[in-house]
Image 1 (tube, rainbow, N blue to C red):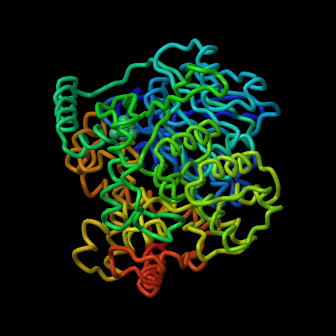
Image 2 (tube, rainbow, N blue to C red; image 1 turned 90 degrees about the horizontal axis):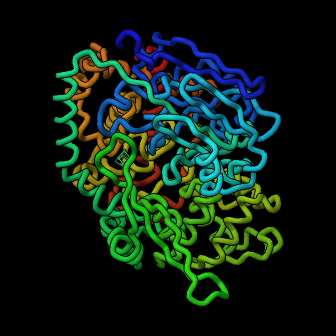
Image 3 (tube, rainbow, N blue to C red; image 1 turned 180 degrees about the horizontal axis):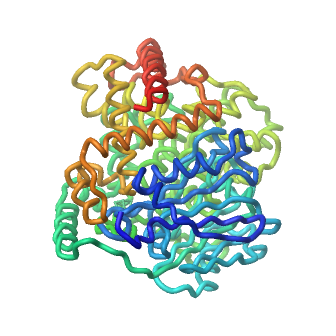
Length: 590
Ligand code: SF4
């Protein structure tokens, strides 16, 4: 890395003592590049073995990379922590202005430990750090809290405001952290970790400038990347309809989980498709900082006030493929307006829409099967497609209204272990499933992915591009998923938006890193990627992860997928081989 690069500055904040300090950690960035790589090393250093995910010892680590604020689409921040949902490795990525603000404030990473005795928010303005009383913000939703902090903070330069809602305050295990109103650290419960620390929000602003080794080369490559991005057909798709574009093709493919995966085609998919939202509700598009694509789609929902003639309010609500699946088809909701109303509340409360939708789907089926009493459900009745019922149930979960709703707030893995119905509790490694029933690669991918996310290795794409045409043995499939996940460690150390993964080839990454002062070959990158992958698995195993305890919900074998090889024998063989390969890799350090 270049001399005097602020990337090497790591800001350590202690909420218990209300102190902070900056350390030069060029060693970590030299070894692991940035983002996920550096965050993994910091997690290992700062998270005590066996620590309570909701205790003061659990660190919140935020990290950016050497391309952040320099090149298009290097727009994401990596968060790492011990997950209150899985009790193990937690990682989540968020865009908005988060990454560029951290870098412009003069940091490559931030580590927050401890617990405040009263609700606070932290304001970082360049080298200054303030602990502000947030008692009056506690209980507020995402939108209101963001608005007030925006008015209070006068920091200069680019600013991000990450905050939690009631779900995070009430320690719902899959609460998210929202940045810039429409972007999220969505998965694995970072919001609950904020809540456990009495941390309502984190506002960061900065305006430092960044060194480059060769201005002329920098400008030339920047223009090349920019033009390739804006002229790419894939990126155009993300701009035009956004990820919601995937609803119709996945439904036609037979891979859209519907009504708690009792089906993989939704007869009303067209009513909640990207095309329907674009034609009837699209209000605006937004982009993350330093991204020319603008894939963030915001719907404008105009509704009359109750008891007031000709008075309307307009809510701006973001939508994407994953929430449309989890709060739409998974719940049998075929009204775009109904979906938006539910999404609006879930956003304000700050819950992960994916986990919450899967939890509500399990709750519906568990009620139908008589596993939950009326008393436990507090009189809530759920029918597929009934938006009103889902709003009531979601509210009880966020409010932790009784023991049953508290259990739902800990995720479907936990709730089904108490109330039964494991066979249709759709969690993998403790994390609720993403919106893909495309075949074995999708489910195996989340089972063996380090954070049990579809983004770990993109198994759903392997099903659609490869397995639907040609067979792969379980071993071949595991090897290809591990290779993909290892390479993604480089992208998430840079930290590049995964939508641009096709654009950021090894050859381009090497050239871009050279501008940022890194001299690395493709072999170096692949070795570092595998090292980071191993580092994550070492943490998982240290914290009690065991392949033997991975549960495979029977439901995925009951509902046909487009790929024939989705059967228990195939997945068990693949898991046994994954265990052998990953364990060997960790031991050998390869
Ligand atoms: S493609 Fe979308 S999510 Fe990715 S950086 Fe750009 S605006 Fe953000």
